[in-house]
Image 1 (cartoon, rainbow, N blue to C red):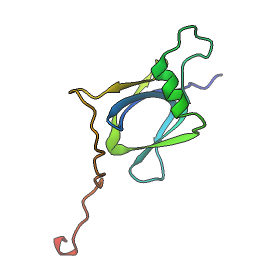
Image 2: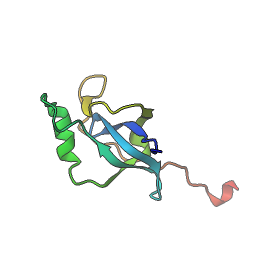
Image 3: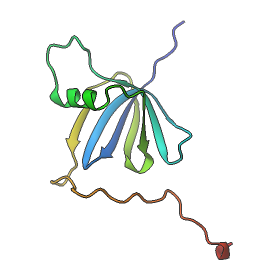
Length: 115
């Protein structure tokens, strides 16, 4: 009996662009506020047509065993039947931001007097 291989499509914002990647493992790990993504999947190496966006992603993630994506950067995670083409696209609304937003805490600290 073969074990079912899950495939996840992960969409997230990075440096003013939307990244769409495929992976076999996605979970909340031990690093608080981050989603762990392992076993990234890219298109067939024997394909005749080469997608420059996918090649750029392959190069960016070359040698990466596991990547940690901040929860606030995740747009969506879907379990899919088969992998698609990894890609980078522009954010809707025109220009990509030139300023990286300051990370906000995932929780609001409580004051002792609020108890």
